[in-house]
Length: 355
Image (cartoon, rainbow, N blue to C red; front, side, top):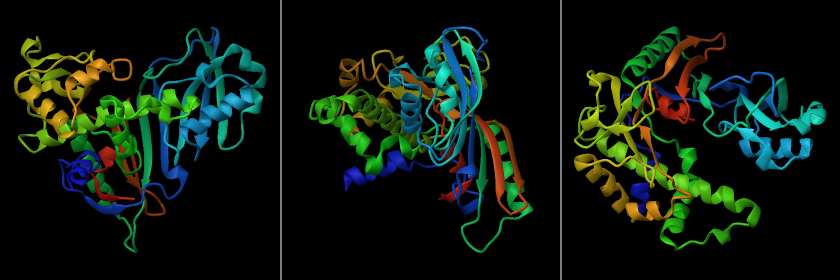
């Protein structure tokens, strides 16, 4: 029972707000979940790497890479992306491929994939080379009740609140695998009870990285969920690591030069040797989460290649928010989020049951 309770806390952590909608479908059609990457920079038109602005419909991130690898006759490791995009969706993003692929790019279109434009840049696209993502999501009623203008207005008010006050920046359930299996495998890998050889050679690198990231994410969710039940949602505790709301550089709260602490946000743990260490009460909360998972900080330190460690903002602040009622009585919500934040986590602050 303890594992089921723990898994529920990780995958379905508490929200800050009561919902304004009881339930909604959000992926009835792939077009209902539209995601457009906000790049950190644009290709300048010259260089050894071809940048493809690609749209995919109902195609998994891994399947996109496989399709490009086969079609362009290039190793998948030579293909660069800034972030993984949802399968049950229509998404647009940059993908970089070697310049040698240029003669075959016309063959890419098909199987739910379409190249919208072609450019070039001097460097390969890598994970994290993006500002964030803009979402356009259709919320559809789950029963005979149809959404009204008042419903859309209430959703818009909630989105504006989140824009100002933020929402808990949890990792979404898709991070943890079916029934939390990625968490179990991550624990096994860190504790030496599971060998990476359980995966075939061509999947080993991807799977070990994925399950290691899943256990880091589980620690983060547990710490954030615990803190939400203790005080004002965005309140600091002694020993916190923080950064500016519009920044990414972590530092101890006690060492901040910021005079207006309302511009700061606490950062939760993604354990590993490169993570800025918390102290005092913040450290105690993080250690308690590790203990609940049967882990120690030293195990993450010893596994530095898989878990280098970092800090993640505990609260995220959407921008460019809107909510309107469509002609077919769906509520179309739009918002932009920083890289790594989950749209479904934001929507949990709006809809009680999201299907």
